[in-house]
Amino acid sequence: MTQLAFVGQSYFSRYSSTRIYYLLDSSLPSSAGSYTVAVVCTGPYDGVAIAASYTGTVQATPPYASASNQGNPLSGGQTTNITLASSTGMLVDAFGIEAQSGGTLSPGSGQTERAEITRSTNCTMNLTDKAYTSSGSNSMGETPSGTYYYYGHILVELQEVDSSGIALLGSQGYTTASGASVSGSYTCHAGSNRKLLVAAGGEYVSGGINVDSVTYNGVNLTKINEYDHPTPNNNISWWYLDDVGFPSTPGSYTVQANFNVTASPGLMGVLELSGAKQGIVDADASSNAASTTTLTTNISTINEDSWIAGAIITGASNTFTPQSGQTEDIDIQGGGGGSSLAVGHELIAAIGATGMQWNTSVSVNRLLQMVVAVPPFAGDNATLIGCNW
Image (cartoon, rainbow, N blue to C red; front, side, top):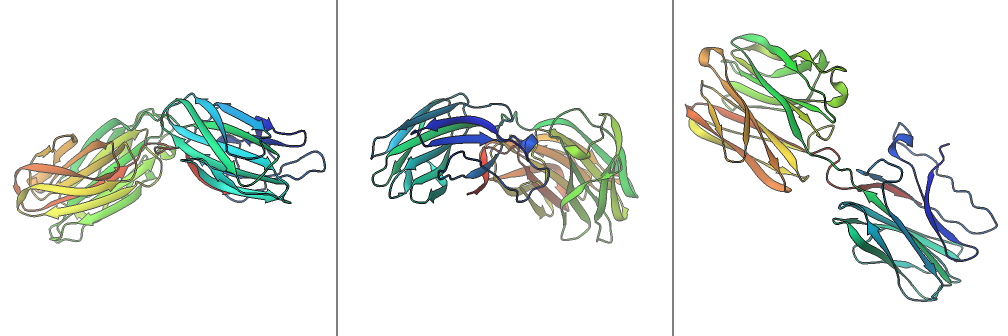
C-alpha cells in the first residue's frame, strides 16, 4: 500500500474537515487497472472520499498553490480565492458541508463537477475542476441547497507540463536504383520524447509495390499507414519509433525499409523529432494526381502546436518547392530517373483543417503524398482521466 502525500485541509467544525492528498506518477501502479483507495478516519463519524486522476501535470512536490476557506453561514454560496503561480493548468476543489437534511451542491461558473456524494444525510462533498489560462488571482465557488451548519473548502493548482514543443533533431534521405530494400546510416541525437519518423516508398513498373517493414538498429518501427497511386506504379508510407525504442547511446545506426518486390527505385526519408507525444499520431491523410506540377493534401489537427509532416513521391526525376510556411527537409531523386521524394514539415498552432502543398519543377505523370499530424508531448492541457467515489 502506498501512502499519499498531504496537500492541505479545511477544518470547518470541531467534528469535520475537508482534505486533499495526492500521488505523483512515479508512485502509481505500473499497470493500468482498478486499485483500492483507503481513507482512515478517527472517531465515530461519517466520511466520504472522491478519487480523481489527472494527466499532463507537473511532477514535483508540491508544484502548485493551495487555498482554503471555512465557516458556518447557514445559507448561501461560498467562494475561495487563490493566487496561481503558473499561466496554464487545472484548478481542483473539494467542498464539504454539514447539513441535517443533506443537500446538493452547485459549482460556480466555469467549473465542472466530477463527483458529488452524501453520507447519512449529515455530510455532502463534491469535487470540481476548471482549466485556467493565466497566472494571478482566481477563485472557485459552490452553492449548497437549503440550510447547512458548516462548510469547508480547499483548492489546489495543478500546473500544466511546460512543453517546449516539437523540434527537429535531424533529417536524411536515402535511395536505391533497384533493390528489395533501401538502407543507410542515420545518426540519432540525445533528447527527450524523441520520435523517429520514416517515410518509405518506391516504384515498380508492374504495380503492387508495398513496404513490408522498416527497422532502425534492428528494431521494428510501427506503420502509421500506406497509400498507392491509382496507376498503381508507386507507393508511399509513414512509420514511427518512439523514444523507448531508440538505441541507448546516441550515434550512427542502420535504418532500412524492406519492399515486397524489387523497387526501381526505392526511396526513404528520416525525420528525428524531440518533444513529440509518444504513440500513434493524431491523424494521417493522402492525395494523388497525374500530369501536373502541384499537389495538395488536406488534414485536420486535434492538438494545438502540432507538426504536420508530409512525404510526396513522383514518377519522374524532378525537384520540389514547398508552399509558404512549410519547411523542406529532404529532396532526393531515385537512380535511373524513375522517381523522386520530398519530405517536409510545418508547425500548426491552431486546431483544425490545414494542408501541405508542393510544386514540382516539371509536370510529372504520378504524384502521391501522405501527411501525418504529430502532437507535442503532453498535449495541450492538464486533463482529467478518471474519477471514482
